[in-house]
Length: 346
Ligand code: CP3
Image (cartoon, rainbow, N blue to C red; front, side):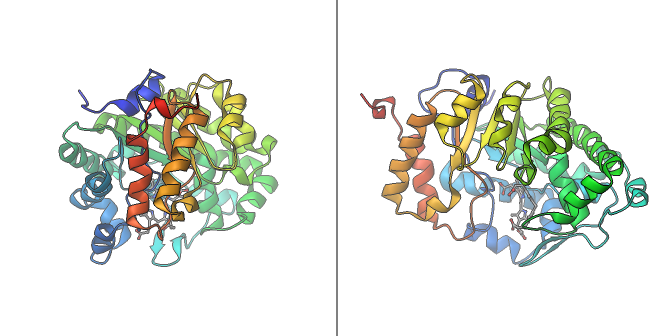
């Protein structure tokens, strides 16, 4: 059905001539056509208007021709649907004026009917599928329950998420109730996204690396694994944990179709920790897109050789930065398309 199915084949572990490529946060602030839309509409208007969300989703595809699109939306639409107010403040980021800090606050968090509350997301998916015309697959996503808890409790971004950790470690019963409510909502939401047409889903655990390996199991991984188990028969699931190299061994034993890796873990070590059999995705340092295009291309070819061209999806190790020149992003994508197995060392 999908004309370019490289991405889906890599998720199945099939042999390919070159790996597929996309970039985390590829629809965003480094693109002038995105900035033009941002100047006219606020953040949640862009998320809630299918014509805008679908247009923003395909902007990077038109410009660079990635092998997969990721729906323009945000992980914080989930707490919003759970009755927690979320604002997106320009030049500040997410702001939640009434953070969840007590058992009573957790009791007030609802598990919504996601079919109704997040209908605008499924409409955006349908509009995007029309624009994509089955040329490439569409990825849907959600935040991990732990990463969502971080924002719900902290109330804003943070370098340490100290209040989120304090809540988990002083009130673990309430914390686990909140994590379970987020998990239940996320599972229902991702299932609806698949029904609306996404071809794969990615769980972003952007703040998993804040936790110790033992706490990661308790407060993050067990909930991500519930999501994987619930979704595995609906669509391939990619689990991306920023800074979570220490958990790759356990993650590789799950039913995830692929695991995301960041740049603090070498390709060789990631293969070693995961036993060499599961598809990996990553792990170019987003700041390395500031290097000259010729160097970017060399580093990308080296990265493909190090991961191996099969069971591999080329990506950054985290989202693209706003200050990346357009021709540098192009060099990253083109390098993958120009890749040939003859680049392998003899
Ligand atoms: O690839 C894409 O661009 C798809 C859309 C996408 C957005 N957010 C749009 C967005 C995706 C996949 C996300 C995920 C997301 N959102 C994560 C996980 C990935 C990661 O980067 O760790 C997280 C932690 C968030 C929460 C969030 N949303 C933050 C911290 C911010 C502010 C900082 C920032 O990145 O700008 C946002 C706002 C946001 N989400 C923007 C975009 C394009 C920028 C604000 C705007 O456009 O007005």
